[in-house]
Image (cartoon, rainbow over all chains, first blue to last red; front, side, top):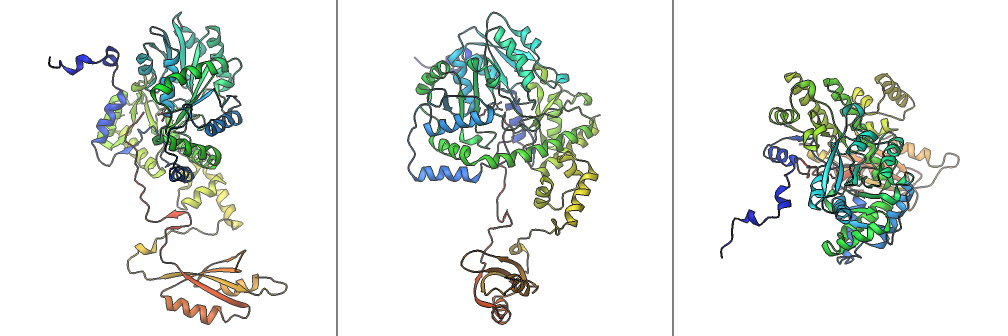
Amino acid sequence: MSIKEQASYLSETVKQLRPSGIRRFFDLASKMENVISLGVGEPDFVTPWNVIEASYHSLEQGYTAYTANAGMIELRNQISHYLQATYHVDYHPEDEIILTVGASQAIDLALRAIINPGEEVIVVEPTFVSYAPVVSLTGGIPVAVQTDAKDEFKLQAEQLEHAITEKTKAIILCNPNNPTGTVLQKEELVQIAQVVQKHDLIVLSDEIYAELTYDEAYTSLAAIEGMKERTILISGFSKAFAMTGWRLGYVAGPDEFIQAMLKIHQYTVMSAPTMAQHAALEALTNGRQSVVNMKKSYRQRRNYVVHAFKEMGLACHLPGGAFYVFPSISETGLTAEEFAEQLLQQEKVAVVPGNVFGESGKGHIRVSYAASLEQLEEAMKRMKRFVDGVK
Amino acid sequence: MELIELLEKNGRMEIETIATMLAMNKAEVEQSISKLEKVKAILGYSAIIDWSKVLDYEGVTAMIDVKVTPTRGVGFDKIAERIYRFPEVKAVYLMSGAYDLSVSIEGKTMSEISRFVSEKLSTLDSVISTTTHFIMKKYKHDGVIFEHEDDDRRIVVSP
Ligand SMILES: Cc1ncc(COP(=O)(O)O)c(C=O)c1O
């Protein structure tokens, strides 16, 4: 018997999955030349040289085999120290930490470990684009909660409370947030934690941008009283250490959760890339100064870009972290999609329309300032010309 | 401190840009800069030039290790001054280790530098010996990598 239309073999879940709205802009922008891209969700720095060199060295030494399923114990020890020293949270290196293929895989593992079909997972919008699709892949139901521009997109306890039903199992919180750059402070986390505890939920806390906060001391959700036992902490090396291409992240949490994830991980991935683990070990042991330098530079550029948007007459809150600003473009009378598309066509500057990050991202654009100051200056000049033209 | 670092990287950065980036006002930045200039923490503003790219520039640079006998009372300072006063001398450092002064010198030709070393430098009373190294290629100078490809290797739009 000959094969039917291939699509008819696909799983219903996958067929239902919508392609990311970012994809469309990628296709548009990559067909054009000389585009200044502020649409990039990764650092403009190359990985610090000592980290690259450590990985070379490990390869020369012949470290080309699998590691333990959970990752090299030396690296888990370092991560454990690092989490303790930086965020005052204790995770046992033996059974509470797994090295993953980016934070991306950590998100997948965590959701697969806890979600039963039909259970609801709350996703806070505007949101990083992967959460809801991964929830759907596990058979769970993503439930969006909208945050408000007037609160600088900080999740309010009441907003969370409203979204909870008897089917709610977990909430995914991204702090600092991609795309808004917003950072929840300790008091705000305490408010959210109260709701979470009251309804007995689990939190997937994606703190991959935690190193990149610029104004106030950072608090991890896991450090809030009563939260460690119900938090799955997700982070990685991509953003803080400029290591996106190495594909290395990690997940830390109570041992029951982590052991369940390890079961999945050992069958689906075996172990995270070995050469990346050696690089990460160097990053944690000797990479602090590079992080401090990069962070300083992001902060300066953030200040510059926020100021530039104010000058254009577009409302833009001062985001406390990550490397994104999320100005409102509603002044221009255009939708975010129109704005981004016309800006790309007329001025060759790529940004991402806010609506791809969820309902409450409408009327906003995500602008990454992980670009050189020269590029930012030129991009802001072009954007101002564009905004003046349409207003 | 951050201000100095910015200027060290780019001495031509606009005051206004510096002010926005550091969340200061223009007057504060101006004041800080003139203070730094006054105490000579900032000595000047210069361009970083890759001379190998400058057409019809012919020149050579040498680094000379110099052993000297220090003079009573003034140590190495006197002899260092005798050397750094020559305009062709671009840098002089007092070093720990096998020799005392590291002298870097620019000239049009190798023979011009050789002449300087044999006639001016080694004839100084307190100079015991010199070892001259000519620079053949500059890969990195003052923290700047020459011949560096800094193309953005990221994809144009990503989550
Ligand atoms: C909020 C957030 N979480 C996770 C990731 C994925 O990171 P990784 O490269 O570690 O998979 C990203 C990358 O854009 C992100 O922005």
